Amino acid sequence: MARLPYLEKSQLPPEHQSLMSRDIALYKQLAHSPGALRAFQGLGSYIRFGSPLDGRLRELAILQVGYLARSPYEWSHHIKIAHDFGVSDADIQALIDDTEGRPATLDALARLVIAGAREVTTAGKMGEATFSALQGHLPNEQVVDLIVSIAFYNAVVRVLASLEIDVEPDYQKYLAQFPLPTTAA
Image (cartoon, rainbow, N blue to C red):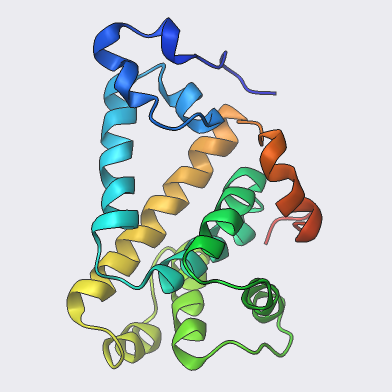
């Protein structure tokens, strides 16, 4: 159960009501700090809609963060979003398999992206070999955007966990289809 009450758009002053552009639990918690929600939405919007980084690769990186953090909210929401950017159920299963050390069917670039996300999430930075390999596939702008995306979603999973934000009923089906392990990575 969430640590703060979920705010509805009608509970906000008129000048902040536009911040509730999506009817999701995360926004309903962050709305307690309109300035933080506005800043959060700015970077999140750039990552999803402004960056030239391929959406499929970005979503695989975000899913890797959510999986490693064992974040039900992040994992379930981004399974749905990932589908919109061309990530298949087979890709999600391959990400899980790769993360768990089993053979995976992802293409080489996708494996590099999730390796980079794994390194940033578990070690605090992307290793030299992965960084150099990504530079062989992506322009520098996209490498930076990938790292910013991974870092941002590492922050998001910590916000979700600290505020104990609940997964909405519409997203529970994604957790049923791809359950998270019960122990932290």
